[in-house]
Image (cartoon, rainbow, N blue to C red; front, top):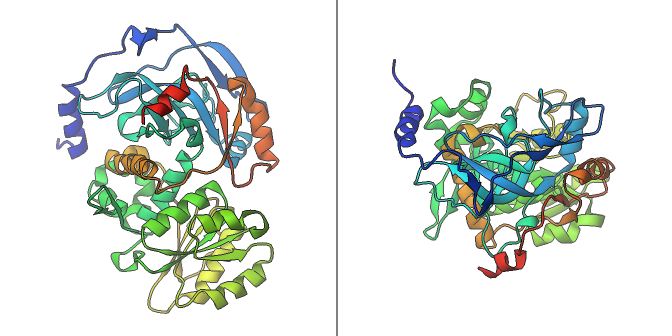
Length: 416
């Protein structure tokens, strides 16, 4: 039987693994158990358990001591509807920051024990990577090193938004980016297509069939972003500008105009009256408008689809990325995309590119993190924080639960 290329590579790499799980984690004794927050029924609050096992490392894994958990409005929706519940899991598909305390990785993995990382566990079926616990697992190529001059808690709520934004633009719309001091070009869609064995069956159509090369977004074209003030919208705007696109953002300008201007949004449109917003876009945005991203829900996605349908030239198909639900009905000349979020962990090349690029963007101040509200109290504070999110009191901001306080965060920042 012919072995897939990626598996052949992994077989070779496994021979050079460092060690198995060590008796100590980084510089202190290995704990026998940990605290973990579990939700046994989506109608009930999370319950704190104090005697849970430390996750077991597999090859390619890092064990991270969790210091901060980033919460976003989608978290309370997922929890209430039971999307991410499994037999013994907390809320999985979210984000956290922490310190690497153990590893089972190839020696070529650049991440070292003691480093701060941001993690985005997109493979939520692996309960070892559940966020609501004191120690959790992240793949080496998915761990995002945090620059030493950046306060880790300020980036703890941007990981999911960044991955969603990167895949929306890079895979769904085919935007080409540059990175590194030599500004080398990379295209996530092309990277994903080079290794079909790393693309799960349920996202094959999105990766291989949803966007022909002639339809990929090119520098100078317009992108409509509905929900521009959301954390994901803020990241999309900044990445789109780095990719050479021009951005029209739709949001509540009475609250967010200054923020969106600071991110480089080319045209701002008020969202309170969508009929007027459509007229404003027609008047203010010259030429064709072929691309849109909606971050809010099915009804606003339908509005974006209608705007594209009225503005698209007859020669090219338009493309809508629906991050929070697809339109109830479809327009024949609009391709609606669902972000293949799992590609971040199934493809070590796509995941690796995104992870390394975020480090570079933060290190060079090319990507501004969202404003965050910090909540102390550790795991015990999460139920209350989810209620605050549900009430919509943190619009445009992330919420970070401080699980543990570093021994000396000032010393960490001073290393820059």
